Image (cartoon, rainbow, N blue to C red; front, side):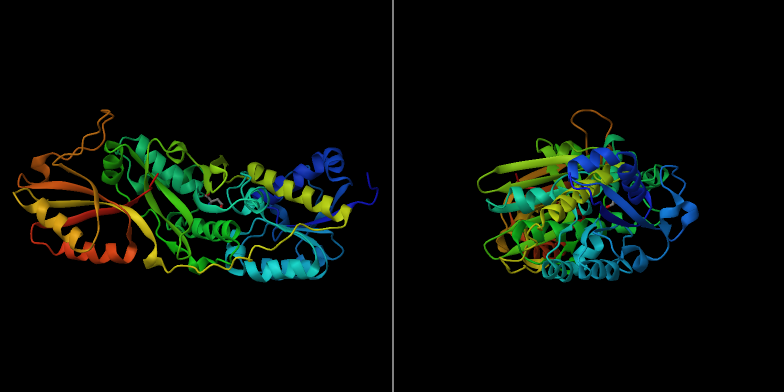
Length: 446
Ligand code: HSE
């Protein structure tokens, strides 16, 4: 055990910062034993000292000045969130020779290469396990445990709020609207008053950029990630998914194809037999496919102060050990520099739900359009009504309610590019017997 303490500056004392500070202060002996030296908090930055009411956190540690707080620190822990002043403080800390631990996914997704380069130049650690999946250990496994493998696909449920919303809609049997489920998420403290970052997929897209960068050793930024949130998902979509033995999930997907990397966020119909379909409530999970390892999945709490502090504290202990040993973990994540595909080149399977006239030749006409565009059909289902096969009371549309001369066509395709599919959909929509393209959702291929 080294006597000289490792000095820690904590920037941020909100839900995660407070849990991190409390963890370090109340388990000091255990952390000293694990790190190899005492971990001493030298300062805690909060813009609102009055908001810090945890009795385990001494008020003498609190300051409102990030610049002053990081001077002389060995490890700077950035939990402020947002771009500034977090970026400036991290760059200053790295320049000063401090190791940095952060949970700031937005900053990493927009300025990752700048921060990695600064850490590399300074020869110090930059760790950010808590930035994706909260408590779930996924970034270090991608960076270290899978360094001897070739990752081909990463698919994550990385936003707990949207998973909670979709799960509530599904378990309500199709009676709970998206807005009502979002209101529930807000009441329970999962969703912000303005739920845009979660519902429209921005949070998941930042995490997709980080996952893709690490999985494929290539800089991938937020602007490289195609993004579609869950705002358009209806109770009928959820009911039809149940009927066809799927569960709708918001997925962050990072995929390696022969042409390059595809990084995207969108709702997807996940077959119920896929492990990702079993992730309920606000939980997160990340599924990884690698050449030698095959499929892997990690699961856990993706948000919340105490769970997320687990990942932050793990990074602090690792950074402290490295400083005591006089080294730093390799930061390089950009050695492959693979091309990043434009959004329209990404390939998916799709399921479209059409309201069409119910008369001979309509199916042939619609399938002919798909064939003309080279899109192969995987399955077709025609039904005037959406009945939950398990009888759980999913929403039912009977023939009268939609007009006796119309019916639903549910068409699932094999893989097609976004570009080819968009062109096909436009032509399908223009067919005279097609009353409406009710929905179009991508399908997770097993
Ligand atoms: N708002 C995020 C979620 C947690 O709902 O999962 C922070 O990334």
